[in-house]
Image 1 (cartoon, rainbow, N blue to C red):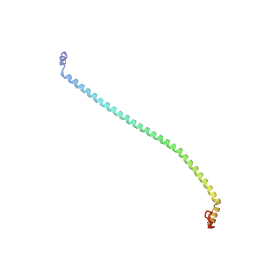
Image 2: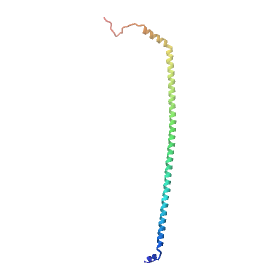
Image 3: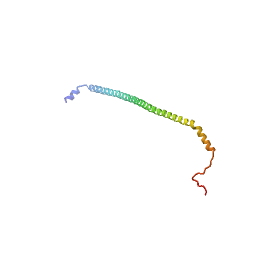
Image 4: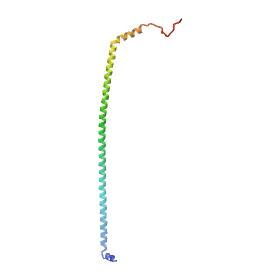
Length: 133
């Protein structure tokens, strides 16, 4: 009971003032907490955005590297095909020269033989056909 009498001796406005101050202090703390959450959220968003940009840069660098490797590979292997094509072309040209040389050398004789066979007709009975008795 002594406490009640002791509290009764204080003016009642003191408790209201302390309560209002406490309420104001709590409100200030809540406002500060909200502001801190906004700052943290902004920072998180910035870090996520930066991480995305960094990942995109890494992807682009990797893509460029692989494209360069592919071009190098393609260049190395396509030059082999070009070399093979050139070798084949040279072989074909050499063979054509041999064929033309043979044609120039014996072409007239072949034409004369063909004309002679076509114009000189000698009917012969094949061996398989039996002559009448």
